[in-house]
Image 1 (spheres, rainbow, N blue to C red):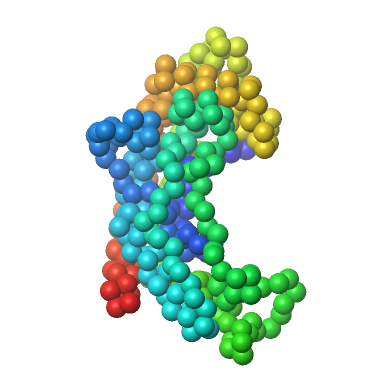
Image 2 (image 1 turned 30 degrees about the vertical axis):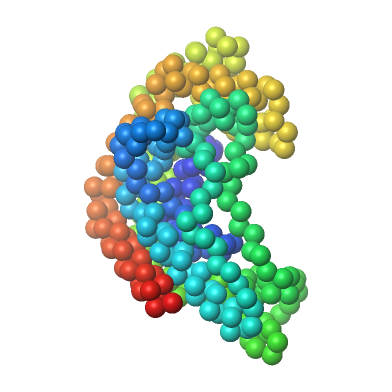
Length: 303
């Protein structure tokens, strides 16, 4: 079975909705970027490159502004709930961004990251989701999943019942009534399915052969870029010299063969075809996103 790329899964999650702070809900999805990743100017092209956010289906994920509004509303509702238990909770900053990291939907693509981390993710790009609360307050924040194992029945804090999902989960629930699960499922299916289908596209198969030939010249024998990406020896805690050397050669051969652009164009064509077949469901999803963001903005304004 072919393994889905992490960025493929990330796009699916963005369409379904994710939230920071350790809960499930809405949150950090890719905003739709300009067609030319270098159009913004000033920054190195490799830092601006994001194939995932330029794919056609990304237009049905939350925009950056919608994400910020929803997360701000969630944090405000959580703060109000925690305050009702006498617990001071400082909301996280929704504008706080993780460190820059290049898109990996089609595998490692940055020479700098390849040389430093091989196929491992850039640790500086991982968002810190730790909640700064005393241990005894965590069950109020997280609900039953934050309580000690084996705790049954109602959660109670200082004589007051705690929502089963905790204050954070309850805040997500208040906004989730505006979700469109059916539309999100369609978009997620397109986001993940198109990646799988693209692996069988003639243009992608041909550029994989060229990439493989390029890698052999450097002494590496792999049939496709997914092979070193999923190699068990490159999955452990330590980043070996072999992993770094392989990743550097991988990126160099992608650049020499134009693999990234060819793969992106092939998958984009597949997505456009699926989008045309599901326009009604996807437009409903986009309308739901807008409504939810509008409600979130009102919550913040009233707060």
